[in-house]
Image 1 (cartoon, helix red, strand yellow):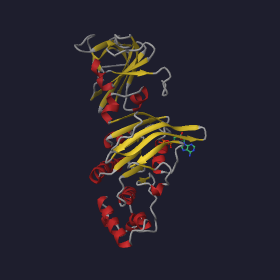
Image 2 (image 1 turned 120 degrees about the horizontal axis):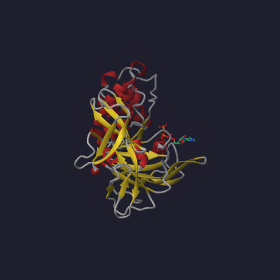
Image 3 (image 1 turned 135 degrees about the horizontal axis):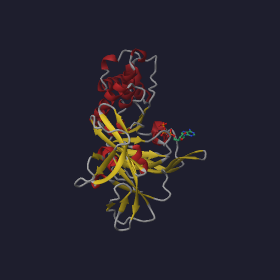
Image 4 (image 1 turned 135 degrees about the vertical axis):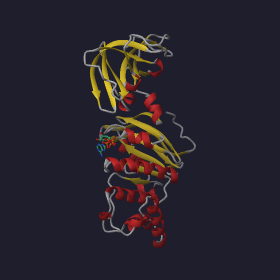
Length: 365
Ligand code: ATP
């Protein structure tokens, strides 16, 4: 990743490291976020998403590196002096204050006159569709409504940058889906840049302009949902995002990479015999065939290992030599296929994505 901040970046993080004792929680993390952009930090539990968010917010101090917001170095500034707001998973509202006063509390603390603070709070509540609940108290609202109040409390300050730490995870699935859409619309309407922590890839895919995939304190890949799904940068990303068949490939110098299944030679510039190669093939791109050959497809013979039919879709796992290959189809595609039955698999070369891995790759097999 480039070490030079992008001139138009709202948030610019450069080479930050964070240790908890001897534990290296963030390793040389750099990231730019543009004005109005929706960026999701995605990764498995413990990968460092919240630590990164807390460094941006100022609740944690990185051990090295810099954080700039709007060009200003904020690395050593306390949270309240940073031009941003944070929304947490647990929306600690003041139980004894009305909804309106909860939202007006921030501006009041920053010295805004009561009349104006209330006016701004009303506007913010209108944005989240809760203006009619202004006089109620938090205990009189549902979980989803309380989370909307927490958002209004952030919007009332009209920050350019909003940090959100799994803000929807306390909500039930249906409400969560609805709030995802609402939040995305609000973000676009207000033009506020969001940095949104989630471990839910569907949430990240459906909301964010760019997704930052993290693993063990490292950014593995930054890209839009399509790019990280179709062109994962590492074996970890391929495996973490969606489902993937991961097959070993062998470098044959300039000729390319030879696949373990179908033994096809795929062109790969400068394939290095000292490196490991992994071919990524999504289950929806693996076809099951009755014949050993099909035009345009790389084919191989295998035996059905198992068939899982979920009603809407069928996943058939086929053993090809020592490798397992999953094939996913909509509908009841598994009919007539029983474990042990011989079957041919086929896939297009264009659907195979090849990843070169350094011998000492961090994420390992
Ligand atoms: P989750 O999705 O579970 O919240 P996360 O990706 O947000 O995970 P972090 O909370 O950033 O993960 O934690 C990253 C790593 O740092 C974890 O191994 C965690 O145990 C460790 N860690 C976080 N905070 C502290 C702390 N205050 N002291 C010691 N270790 C910490």
